[in-house]
Every structure is written in C-alpha cells, then in structure tokens.
Length: 227
Image (cartoon, rainbow, N blue to C red; front, side, top):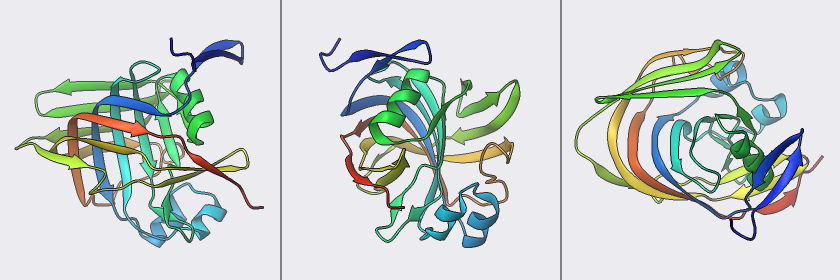
C-alpha cells in the first residue's frame, strides 16, 4: 500500500482513501452532444443557479470500464451538460459508479458528485449493453454498437476542464487521457428522467469507443464557493 493511502471510517464502513494524482486504465464510450438552452431549462435536472450559468459548448455522456485504478476496477456512467460560468469550465452534473470506494474518493479528491449504484456491462461482438439500476428499477440503459478502423484519440482534441462545487469549495481539475478509438453508435436508450437527464430525442453529434485508454486525474486546485 502506498504510504499516502490510509483507511478512513465513514458510515461504519472502512474505505480506502487514495489522494491524487490517479492513473487509470480501461475502456470507455464517449457520446458527444450539443444541448440547447431550452433543453437545459427543461430536461437537464440542473439547479436554477446552474441553469443560469450555462454557456453552451459540447456535452457528453460517458460509459467507462476502469480495469485498473488506485482503488481497483469499477464502472461508471456520467453526464456533462456543457460549459458553465464566465471561464466556461465543464461540470459533471450526474455520475454513478459501482464502487463505494470510488464514490468517496471522487467526492473528496475532486468534488465529483458520485453516487454508488449497480452497473452491468455486457460486451458482445461489436456492441456493448450497459445498464444502471436502483432498487431493481432501470436508471439508464443503452446499447452501443461499434466497428471500423482504430484511430488515436486524446484530450488534446477533446479537452476537459472541470469546475466542481462540493461542500462550499470549487475544485478545478484538468484530466488528461489518450487511447485508441473506433466510431460507435448509441442505440435503444431507456432511462428514468427523474434519475438521469433525459437525452432521448437529442441526436448525438458523434460517438466513439476507446479501448484501451489511459487517463490521468491530477491534483485539483481550489477556490472558495461564492455565496
């Protein structure tokens, strides 16, 4: 165990705490959108305060299967509506993972509002079937097909600059990553709009499946949240 890794006791559960930076490896699917202001107002699930700070830009839905991480393997499904505030940073507004250890570390290390829910990921030839459940009900499910020739892809082409608010503090983080991608297509989306932003009816601009990839999450820098 790394000397920085310590066990913390929360909610009667021991959780491995691993400070940043993190290096993660695995496979993932990135679906690119551009959401309208009307969609943000009606279907994003954002607070009124965040809706007022929306500045457009690309939005993302990501499905990630981390095969290697400092807290072990886990899966996640996340949503980025676009860019916010004057500096036009991105915000992860909804994210579920199937590891409580990942949830706690994501919240404390980078202010990412993770929630722990079961995620199933079935890999078949040229397609993936992904489902998130809560109390036996579907939160989100989708089929993603993929194929063709692989090409290199990195955050140099699709940069991520996060500003996450958590417990009165703003966390600023610029994760980086690279891998090999194939074009993909999002199909058969089912979701509960009370539990996940309703992307049904919004046409994706592009989708790619990246396998393998390496992702690096550095230490964030901080600012107090303004009232």
